[in-house]
Amino acid sequence: MRTGTRAFWKSADTRTFWVPVVALAAISTVDPFIRLGSVRFAQLSGFQDDFFYYLTIARNLAEHGRSTFDGVSLTNGYHPLWEAVLTLLARLAPAGSVTFVALLMSVVFGLILLSAVLMRRMALSTWPDAPVSVDLGSLIFVFACAQLARTGMETVIAIPAILAALVSVLACADAPSPRRYFVAAVCCSLAVLSRIDAAIFVALLVTIALAFGAKHRVVPAAQDAFKPRILASIALGALPLVGYIAVNYAIFGTLIPQSGAAKQIRSSASINGRVWEFLLAPRKTPSEFVYFFLVGTMPFVLAVAGCTRVAIRHVPPRARIVMLSLGGFTLVYYAVLSVISDWSLWIWYLYPAATAGGPGAVLLFSSLESRLPRRLPQLTAIALVLIAAAGVMGRRPASNRILGLGVQIAEFATTHRAGTRWVTWREPRASCCRRGWCRWKAS
Image 1: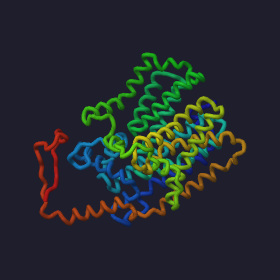
Image 2: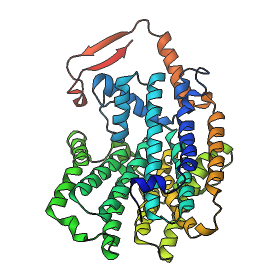
Image 3: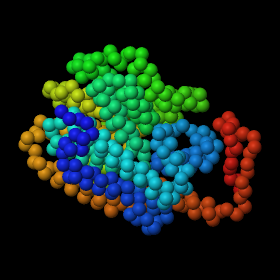
Image 4: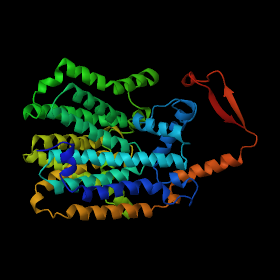
């Protein structure tokens, strides 16, 4: 079985797969510019609410070097890897400008393609005899990934980070070495830094890989993971995550973001049914169908079905590791959310289901590989591209309520500048300002 780079590119008709993948990525990345000029700040109208929280902190980090939303209080209420990307872009172009959004969507385009590469490579190495199923499942995954990428939220970097962690751990299972364990530790660290709750996935992945690797001899020598050189490589690769935890504890006295801690303040001890309603409730409008059924409900059902098949039928050990880690993460993630929080979910919370839906589809369809029409992936790709294009073309920038309120505030600030003055405090007014000046606007 050839699983190298050459086999990856030659194992199937690459053109019939990559043309729709590039089309889906391009549709998502041109979304902010479709209605440019129709309303003020139209380039920002397609992004979700919390993106503007990220954007404000990125602007303050780029301009003042302080992690603050309001200019006074320090905050760690974000997932750090995506904030770092936005801060870098904010140093290259004014935050929120058309140039900034163009740079951002170039990054998003690359991350969607990276996600597709990682998913297809992992699927081909796991199900080498099911190329039609691999293409079909990968296309379902790319569609969901591209839709989530349009939100501007951290899931666009969390999905490839999770897949990179999975691929790197599987590489350690194929041929353990200090270098591969170092890469796996780095990828696992980046997965957690991309979304802190991805720590659940990393814990599941490591546990399942070690357990099934030792039992089914997927890992040539499971005890190799505990040799001094291997442990040193893992410790070195985990330094980014350890550094983030140490900084949080030293500055904020907590190991997790403040926003995560706030969402765990519950008003009751009952199960939060809104989590499952968000995942499984039927949708009414076409746009809700695209976002919530094709991106969340269908991938979630595929993930559950894949885990069920693993539980009741014999599957190869490698497929078992893939499905139990991704599908298990999906089930555990939403179960935990329904217990520890009574908050509603938003579109970007669908990223575990969107990631697990692809392998789930491949696993289910692989048993029917000989009966599947060879043109099925192409027909599926055409339908998904048309649905994605219709979703972008049908979006109205004026419907973004958060952006509308922001425009009103900007207009108010423009018309009420008379009689204002900037006051610079040389002495800090609060403990959070010890390393900088606080600036505020007074009448």
